[in-house]
Amino acid sequence: MNRAAPFTFDDSLWPLLGVRLTGELSRQEFEAYLDRSTQYLQRGEQHVCIFDLSALWLLSSEQRQRHALWLEKNAALMRRTLLGLAYVITSPTVVLTMSVIFHFRPPPVPYTLVTRLDAARAWAAWHLDEAGLRAQAERVRSQLYEGTFVGTGSGRGPAQLSGPC
Image (cartoon, rainbow, N blue to C red; front, side, top):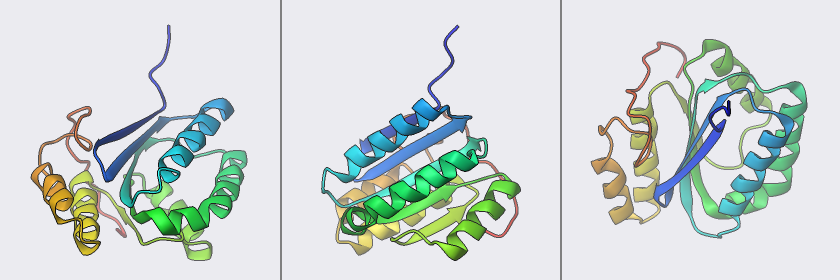
């Protein structure tokens, strides 16, 4: 039996890119995820990215190191194309891990850690608006309470969790 893909990319509301990571990624799956992420950056178009990590298990230390190298290699491209990153995280352990990592090595673009998808979408819309992409920001705002990921998706509502976000 094949398992569901551990990551999905949704560009149906471009320049809002939604990325959902679920479960545990194998080495090959993680490399495929990084390759796909690179392809979006190489478009050279300004965009905002929402990462839904609410169903992700912690990355292995090897994957964290590989991700750090990928970030270092792609930092200039990220600064040119990414208007911001919003991370949806519901696990207190993952929130703490990300907060510590970002304290020592923050992303090269504005970012936020939130516990609810609607908060991430509102943040993303604000950044699109600030970049002069008003029509695109309004499209994102019109989808705020649809109960889906970005434009399509599972339909599950946003998780509620109190925490430092």
